[in-house]
Length: 203
Image 1 (cartoon, rainbow, N blue to C red):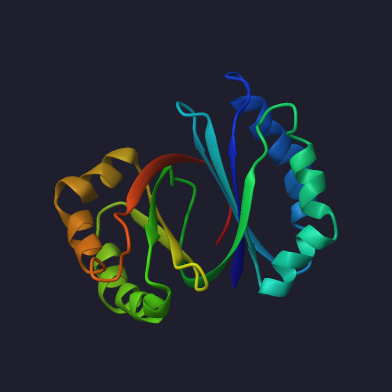
Image 2: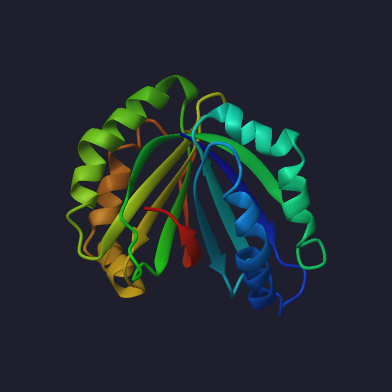
């Protein structure tokens, strides 16, 4: 599976509700018709005016076709009056472990830079050591790991039923312990951001 990730910043402070309505009513009906489409996750940080859109596709070819066909540009154009020009990137999805349900509300997003030649080692540690412990945390609803093997970029989305449960996973030292498993692979300190789940079309 591959993901096309779009990161956008709002251009007007009042745009969030309008943008989400456009997304639900105009973008998603067309997105679901794209060849190889596997799901969508929309995350919003209202305070910072930042949004992350993850569109999942069966293959890398499908994700690239969405751009080459003009589909992506058409959808972004619907928000041109609301956002600054977004950044788009394509990632491999080596880990997809999600059972969202209706209650999922918050996502912790961890951005990491890994030595490119150590990416396979990092994925193995994530699957074998980090994920099993993550799944034992109260309120856990899912994990999505995205990687770019060429650049060493990695993004982890951990999904939680409530904001309180997400924060508890940090306060009980679980999150720090998980990061420590990858410290020897990082080329720079990881960074974290918190988003609300504004929309999802996932299993």
